[in-house]
Length: 138
Length: 306
Image (cartoon, rainbow over all chains, first blue to last red; front, top):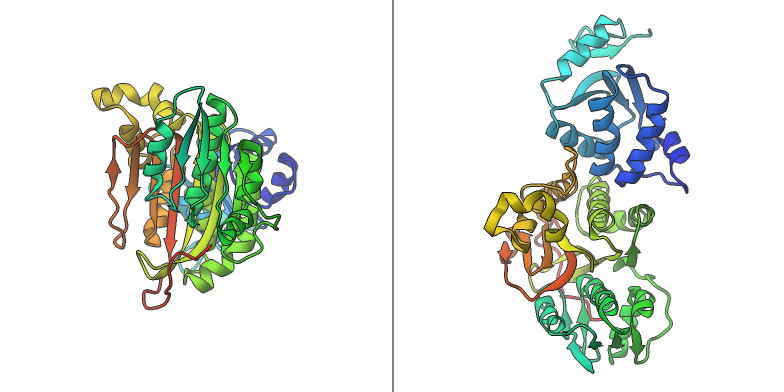
């Protein structure tokens, strides 16, 4: 999804989410169809390099100004390394869906449990027998 | 009148201040002759720094002159590293410059490349990912995952030009054996511009806070150590902090020169000074990142002969 929006938002064919102007263009494209306070899912599959500036422009600003819960999927370790400090530094968090389907917080540790609670409350997530959380079919 | 600015025979970050001192003596309106005829080695830092000097000189007066290295191996290497492709627009070049293809060898991971806009950063990041991953993982012994971090560090370094310099700049990335310091291979990223520099960029938001201490050194300290930015946006200042984290993990070094000061995060293997002030004034900012090979028992040689 993010990769597709990157292709729509930026002149030329790029696989990398780098630079603030790129991040801004991608975020504005996402925001157009996103009501404030929504629960949003962003899929990073196909995205190559994500730098700190772009992580801040897209992920941190969406969490801070637009969405209630942001769930990221398709993240590589390198994507996480860019997103985690940007969110933690701003006291923000998102949820990530791991390859095994389990949900976990990324960013500041304090806000993450409330994000999981929000999904559970809306029946969008449920607890696994082992104690971790996963998305429901809803 | 034409003023001679000698290019050091071994032109890198260590000899850059000698070059800057000669450059700083120029008076507005004087035509400068950058004399590199005796050069027998230049690091990426030297090459992009020379281009920044050329741009600044052209802004102040007549188009500067450049005498190319006399040594055919050296001039050929500079050509293959992409230096003369950029220099042709800035200098009146004298000497025999061979027409060679740029960056056809493994040492030049990224030839001297102009950075003027965000699109240029995309090109740089895309190029480096194609060329650098094998070098970083197989030759430097970095975890393959470090390749992406390397691209991130490179991207953020280049963005400093786009976001803050107020003009264009250049980036170059090379890998070579580094006998002098390490007896290991290193990858070096060098980024230079002749723009406004850190002090000017941060003055409006930071000068008051520092009071009488305000200057080039304080501005570099604010940017690299404290992570401040000229933008009030709370998410700003992430780039240099991210570069520091990446280099700390791989025992790398970052040094930034701007105006009359130079700041460095110095790893165990280096004996550089963390902060120098009162250096010869030089326009813009010059950034150096060094990532060393991770295995100490491997590697040998010295700066490759050019």
